[in-house]
Image (cartoon, rainbow, N blue to C red):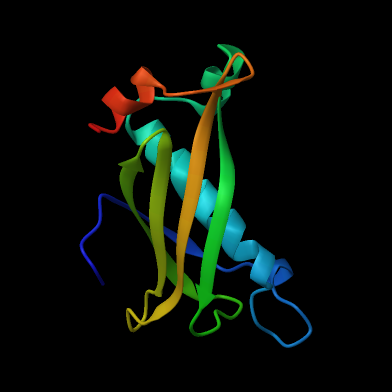
Length: 131
């Protein structure tokens, strides 16, 4: 596994698999989103609280590469790194199967921040992320 800023261990649930017996591709998006929210919580920031205060981080672009499938019962580790380009926060997220640490999924997720509905730089998140 590559070094990362944050990681979260999870387990595949039966209902996340398709007829082929592998995790449906849409669930990888859920795994990465959940990891981003847990990362925020680890920094003392609640995604819901940000929204209540008019700060909405929204996904603007996703680039995903599927390397190997996960199956029901597999434990996996979702990792997160972050960089900033202008007003964009770019999350570099990988998923590794826990049993052998093989890379199963890699993604680059670009988010932007709307403050009271306007596209803006967010000093609070800049400080939270040390960017």
